[in-house]
Amino acid sequence: MYQRRRRHHGLDLDRLDLDGRPAPGDAIPVGHAPLAEPPSHIAGGFKITVPAVTLMSGEEQTPCYIFPLTVDGPSRVVGGGKLTVGKGMHHGNITTRPKTGEGVRPCPAGDGSMGVGGEGEDILLGGAVLFGSSTQITGTEWQSFPEGMGYRLRDGFEIVARMHYLNVTPDALTASPEYEWFTIDEASVTQELGPFAWTMHGWEIPPLSKLTVTASCDLPAPMHLISVLPHMHRLGTRFTAGFWGGKFDGKLFLDSVGYAPDKGVLTDYDPPGVDLSQGDGATFSCSWNNTLDKTIVDGIGDNEMCILFGYAYPPENAFTTWATDGSCVYVAPPAPP
Image (cartoon, rainbow, N blue to C red; front, top):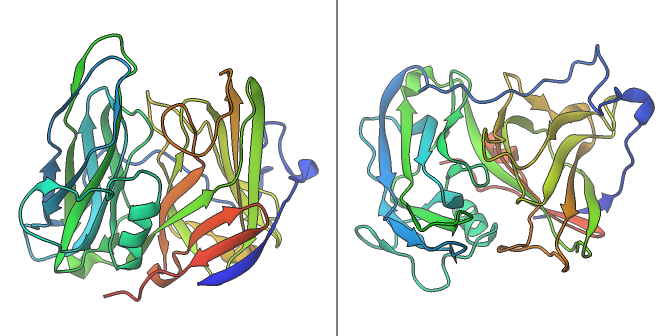
């Protein structure tokens, strides 16, 4: 674990276009939506269907389920996946962790909290982040890594699906997400990836007001970002991430609306990805417009979150961050299997 001093940072407007994006000519990767197709060199895979849950209008539930991790084929490197879901799923965090039992079953009491609590513990125990979906997405959302890249599964692990359902429609509906992952031929793997999550806590949004929070932190070691997923709720208006320090200081590699149920907000980068060694670290920022007559805090329901999930390499440098007012705590991932 590393303790790093947090620093607030104002963007250098002279080095940005009017829309806030990097000025032309800078060698900063431009993100794009994931390819809507399976990866090359498929060697097998696995899938799960989350048990159906019926939600009345306005109802919110956070069920959690455990599934066996049963992979077809010889490979243990995941090169991509997809989610298929109808209305009603706010988001789902799917991870792996050391095996605790047999068969499909509900999680033990207290194991289904949303955020990065249980998921963070899973990662520290050597688990993989199998899928993090865009908020309130419907239809099919793809996870697609560049050719030759993927994350490794460990033997002796199980799948944990921490789901968050919210029915914002006037009618009852049934949610039953389906997930499928594709493993790739290990002979084709050129770079393994590791999961990370950068989280900002300790903020409050007063009633009927706007707020932007920013964390800017040094990084302990070089880190290349390949895929990122901003996580905000319906009051979110903008999620940005950029360089902190160095020649690209203040320049953005991500400028997202943060919340887009119609198309999702997953963003991929072509190799070599976003090379954060070109600066001292990274900065990320969340903006909200609180249209409600109450204070909004970090949480579920009407509340909000400020999290950047993603995958990076080398996997031993895929640092997870817990940012608050005054500090950034970095947690190094476990050694690769």
